[in-house]
Length: 298
Image 1 (tube, rainbow, N blue to C red):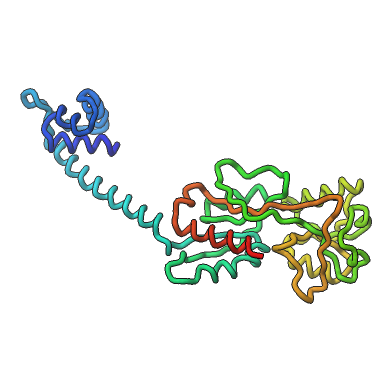
Image 2 (image 1 turned 90 degrees about the vertical axis):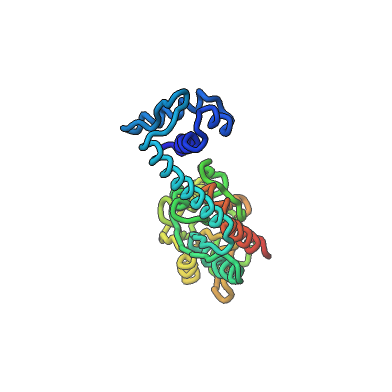
């Protein structure tokens, strides 16, 4: 049933005439009459009857009007509950991130939000193909996602909050023949063994661009989605891999170095994705602010 129509029925019972209801509702009597007629079509018993020149409620109409009061109270309570939920700075906020982002940012984010009055953060790691990131916004309040520079933008139905543009470098062993160079070229990398990611993941087009620029297919010997596993393979031998400069930076003592590709700069965008309504929540805004501060910190 239409809540507006129920409210008009209640007003008719309390005010006694269509004219009085129309004045109180700032509409014409005919508009009130049309709404009550539409409500009557959905009810099997008469809701109103003529009594002299006035339209009054029947017993069924009075019963429905009393129910309309209960509905109005319930709706008011629901609206207040939603308002409290939107304004509650301590509400639970769920966030997912691809693996390297979660490893880099979850710990400082949890520390930043550990104080009294902060949101309760629930973290998940979800590393999926680029096309699948937007769908995660149905399951999480915030989604840390990544896509290659110049790739297809995120859907317009999703709110996008940019976090960082992250260069992609070539990771190699510190004992590699190219390790002492400040940067490398595509030609320098000819003939190298590569660690790639699985098909469908965001770095695949970057590796394809390298192959096109080199004029020959890359010699891919390993396919690993997790950067830190790929780093172990690279450190163990002569293979090289594309690595994000910040979220997968080599740890001290890892035996790895990162080298930018001088003649083919590659990068990815790391963004926060969410449904537009999520940003109306105070707790979500707190998490967004805290994460942006962490990402921007030197």
